[in-house]
Length: 293
View: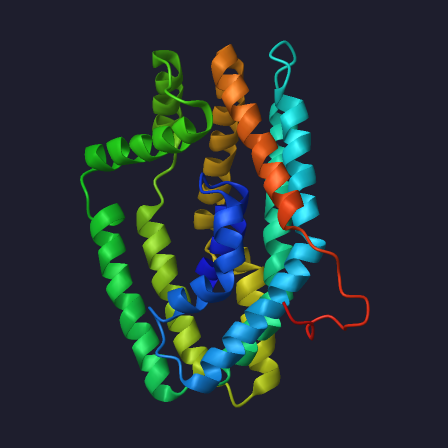
């Protein structure tokens, strides 16, 4: 379920793919993605599609303008190379992205719970079999690799992401990425252990779904406040690594060439325009959660 949120939040706000291409097709992309985990029956499929249409109506009428505003504020903060962005300001932008995510998860949590209450025992077994298959693939790619290989892969992923926004990196910028990478606390083992712990928790929770009040409350907590379920050490390491990534962002801003800055500002402006284009007016005569997309 967190992946569904990621598709909407991260892909639309930060990914290189234009939201004008992705957003209008979420009503079939999300069910298609879900089929990797569940074999949906016709009633469930209809429910999911209608729920997504309703939630997209809420999302485009209440959230997309906020995304556009966020992007334009960031654009203004990054515009002047003689007045570089501060760590505090960059951290505030990150906090606002987190709030966007929480607002979305809080909104869709009831629909997710409604769906989960319809799954059969066979579907539950199918879900956890598929999740474990995915776990093993992720372990092979991210966990069970030599430290040197993991370091190189992590740097390559960051450089690739940055290249989409500013173009080819200078040697100084690549060194900044290497310094960032060397400061990170390694969390791959903790991440996989936590992933399996939460999956086991969900498996046990499904056995108690006849207590609907408890089930709804717990699923909501799991979705909206995932930090409550992480170990203190793992949560501390996540926060530390986020802080190091913000430091990298601030450092790179100070190293941008005029051409790199122009490319980045153009992409921010284009994304903001995309969100304005995709935003819609709320339906005045409909209640939240009952509108059609």
